Image (cartoon, rainbow, N blue to C red; front, side, top):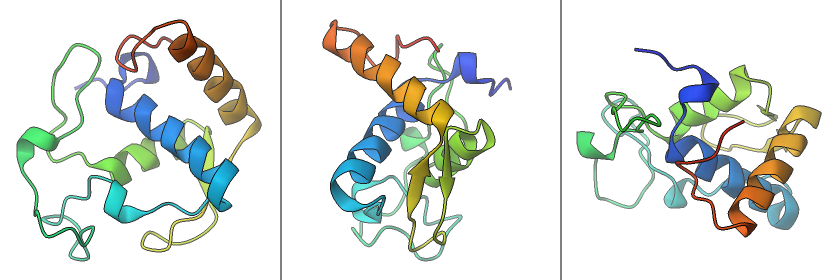
Amino acid sequence: MDYKIENWGKDHWSLLAYIETCCVDYGGKLDLKKMRVNNNKRPFGNGNGFGWENAWSSPLKDGTLIDGHDDLDVLDDLIKEELCENIGTEINTMIKLTERGLKVTQDLRVHKINGGTFKEFKI
């Protein structure tokens, strides 16, 4: 399966937008309870008690689900593309946007202001 940034779907871009909000309002601290955490892969889960359904896996732009892919996997993808960096731990996540990440979040914000959806966003 192709996980190239050009093929990312709504979950990747919505998480980037959430990260921007956390950087602005909370010093980069992410709230795992607001994130999809696959407790089949990560025993700490997100604490909401809902467990994990594979239907919640991240979709690509074409709708194909990435099996078991949760928001922490999405975060890893964002980090690999140098849009942000984790300056904390997996459980106590503290995110910093990179220069590239600042540019992409600006483009994403303009896209959303103009009526676009996260799924339609093109980097």
